[in-house]
Amino acid sequence: MNNTEQPKAIVVIFGATGDLANRKLYPSLYKLFNKDKLSKDFAVVGVARRPLSSEEFRQNVKDSINETLKKTQNLEEFSSHFYYHPFDVTNRSSYLELKDLLYELDHTYKTEGNRIFYLAMAPEFFGTIASQLKEEGLTNTDGYSRLVIEKPFGHDLPSAKQLNEQIRQAFTEDQIYRIDHYLGKEMVQNIEVIRFANAIFEPLWNNRFISNIQVTSSEVLGVEDRGRYYETSGAMRDMVQNHMLQMVSLLAMEPPIRLTTEEIRSEKIKVLRALRPIPEHDVKNFFVRGQYDAGEINDKPVPGYRNENSVDPQSNTETFVAGKLLIDNFRWAGVPFYIRTGKRMKVKSTKIVVQFKDIPMNLYMKKEEDKVQNPNLLVIHIQPDEGITLHLNAKKSGQNMQTTPVKLDFCNNCTDGFNTPEAYEKLIYDCLRGDATNFTHWDEVGLSWSFTDPISKVWEQQIETDFPNYHAGTMGPKASDELLEKDGYHWWPINDLEQ
Ligand code: BG6
Image (cartoon, rainbow, N blue to C red; front, side, top):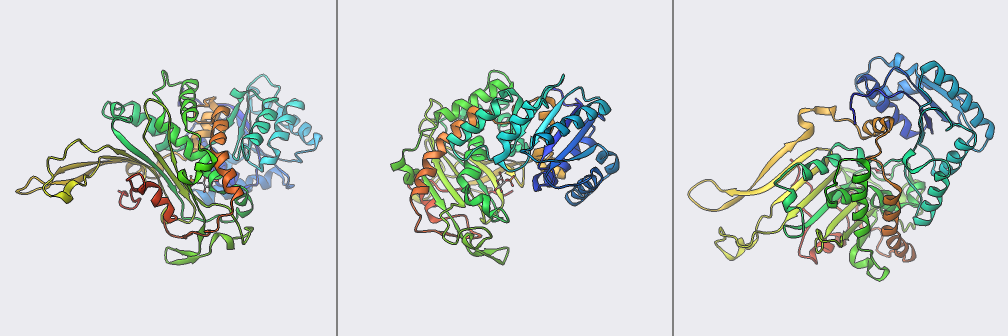
């Protein structure tokens, strides 16, 4: 794919006054514009219920960019490409008016009929909008029509299937771009490169040399103002079904035969197919759930989950999940992949720790207690720090033959500073260029739900009497540590692993 391409298109954003559009989409489009990655032939049409003029909308766009980014320039020119269309999702005439506006803009900006419909709004309308766009002829142009969909993509497998079928009546699979913003993160994209461009890792990347892999994505924030959504979702649907399983599939996939969208996706799909399903009676042995209680974060008291806005005071919703995944294929048989994610934890951090097996014999062991080796670890820092650290053993200096752990560090965002492109910037650019590699294929979505559904089902049927079971500002419930301890492992502490 060409990175200097300047795609021409109209981007129609449904949910144009919403949080996602303001915080992520406008700043990302703006960065692309300033990096000359958008041709001058582009227009953005904001669509939402609220009655606004295009002038007012442009002002909102400028405000949100000024709030999000430190330095701005060319804002007037950029925002002059923005138009607003007040819209009622269920009203036919709204679509017809939008259609006229798009024809007009097509002509003004010579966008060659290329259209991106970005659904950044409540998921209950995804299906209706997709079908209406087709029915009213908005997708019928000389150029391309693409549909970008934010999560949640369904609530479980049956609802996701239903949504998919509805969307597929209007858009083909290759026109659908399902966003998982983790796939736009620089270091998540780097997993493949670290694995497949280094002779020293790939030969070791299997069950003969790796003892376990740990993927942590911890957040300090609570549910904020999203209590209503989160109550129906919980950490399993919010983070595990998508972001966590996507990272696991990139870590575990076979090398693709080519770096094409189809080949990469097909390798990831194979991993998800090889995930060992967890039978209902075994859920408690493989998965742990948690819910935060009040606690302290940065020396400030914060409320428990059950006291957050729009949350049931008896809520059974999990805000933390830890789990052990097994991948039943030749490469990974016997290697546990541990995942954990939660809100109101001690640090904001996404990290992958690959723990290598111990060497067969420790020559430097003097006493019985030295038996504990420092295993080699490869740590992939996804955020906020970006980089990799390799933990090795070297000689302690002086007159001895003792070992000491040392680290080889590469920091990706140290030199580039804040220049690492934001996930959304990359993903929007990919979509404009028609590269769907870093979007999730329906098969991935479906297989991920198949894996998580039985666990969610058990949890919904059983009221967790232990909730809340971890204090805000900690690394989750004790049971999460025990999950690894019973296999003879422990979570590598996130703080010690910080560079
Ligand atoms: C979103 C979840 O998909 O990812 C949020 O809905 C979560 O609940 C967010 O906070 C985490 O993303 P990031 O990029 O901050 O790790």
